[in-house]
Image 1: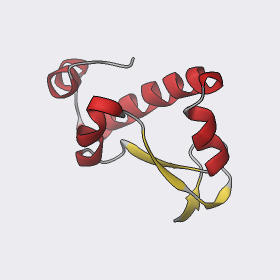
Image 2: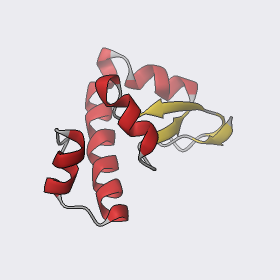
Image 3: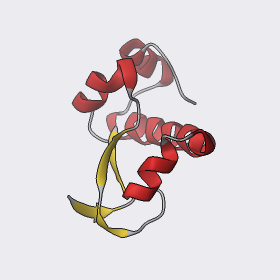
Image 4: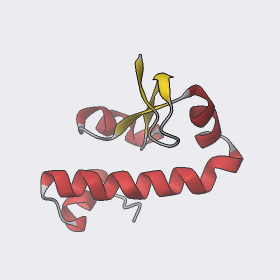
Length: 86
């Protein structure tokens, strides 16, 4: 798919990235904004040990954005996810 990378802003071929993966992947699929586009380089980076801080920052940013878009409080978020990244 073509688009813009959420991390570096590059335009071109992108990959889907579930910001909250693993056991949270199904919830990520249901909640708009929890799946972002990343260029292949940033996608590899975010899944590497070197990308740990960028991954944490992306999770925090997306949580704030999704909460704001839905009018949710942190308590609302916790009721849905069982965990907070902020």
